[in-house]
Length: 430
Ligand SMILES: Cc1cc2nc3c(=O)[nH]c(=O)nc-3n(C[C@H](O)[C@H](O)[C@H](O)COP(=O)(O)OP(=O)(O)OC[C@H]3O[C@@H](n4cnc5c(N)ncnc54)[C@H](O)[C@@H]3O)c2cc1C
Image 1 (tube, protein in one colour):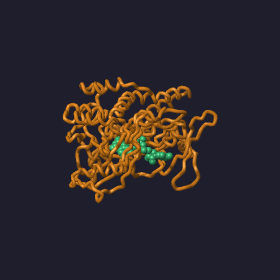
Image 2 (cartoon, rainbow, N blue to C red):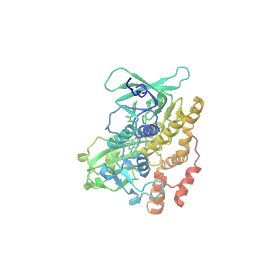
Image 3 (cartoon, rainbow, N blue to C red):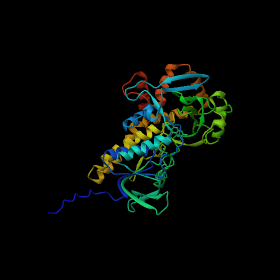
Image 4 (cartoon, rainbow, N blue to C red):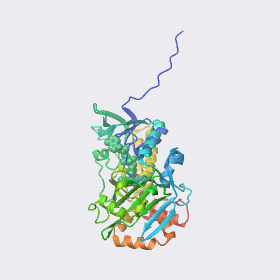
């Protein structure tokens, strides 16, 4: 009698996959998670090794909380997440606490978590779901079809040396962050007609570490110039605060500001007992760009799909990027799953080509509104007038919170309908 030998399951060759995702930040990890959940074979290539630092404010609004919950990630305090109730705004000599709005679409709380922890949590979630995460692998360029110029894979270098290696897939996702070398190599550069921010941050030991509100300071002065941007103080719950500031490129000061000096000067004006002094600083001051309002397009080009910061998806009004990186990851994954399930190449192509439109449907109107907003606050007199006249009006500021954090219900109250209506009316070229 011959012994029955079970068939060996067919494994894809190690260097091939249905989809390659380059970069395992929030955008890449979320894209990979949803692709793997739908049964696709995903290679997630990340140049660093987790856990690792990322320059960030570490603040998560209810939008971001929703994306985490959708992925089945526990966001309890026992698991190390620090909750907040809303935003405290300080400006024009006034201080206003604005709770997160009560909505059906979003939870009523935000979170704070270091990127050291957050990004590893997301990447491991993608891995648990079946994505093949390779850490310490830097993508150095695209592999192209010589005839069509279409991307068919990537060339990568491992951190521990060795030969360059090619990886191949049916589609490739650029989730490699603001500088997105892969997009640039495919001819996709940043758009100068879209807003850009720059932000710096560091950490201080402080008694204010367990603040249950995110705090935002609207008055940032460079001498007698009011700057378009804001400073933040987010309690990390571990004895430190994340303190930083961000500026927009819509003022004359952009590019001519010493951000480190500006941060120190702003903190010099704080009460001494808060402890925001050089002796209490626990990390270097580090900064990076905030690519906003779709500042790199098209989001689909020759087999390459852009997601998160690579596609310039930071909210131009408040500088929030994590929620948009994760949400766009889900939109993208759902598009790819449908595209790769089509039997003919032309059909696959038609579905992939719909991705920019899906993004535009989700954010186009709001980002267009944001582009008008950043132009207006680039004018110091207007910004100072707006701060002075809105800070004394809590109802107006509650509306402003919904607008700046993009938190509304589709059929909510009058203020939700006003924000939704404004987003719909804003001219929205893709
Ligand atoms: C100072 C500052 C403060 C901020 N504060 C906040 C905040 O409080 N809340 C908020 O929501 N947003 C904030 N943001 C924005 C937020 O950090 C980004 O929007 C978010 O990180 C975007 O996620 P991403 O996955 O698209 O890109 P990233 O987080 O940049 O991830 C890209 C990943 O790709 C990897 N990678 C890059 N190149 C390669 C390559 N060639 N090969 C392989 N891997 C590669 C990188 O190592 C990285 O892991 C802040 C930004 C700055 C600069």
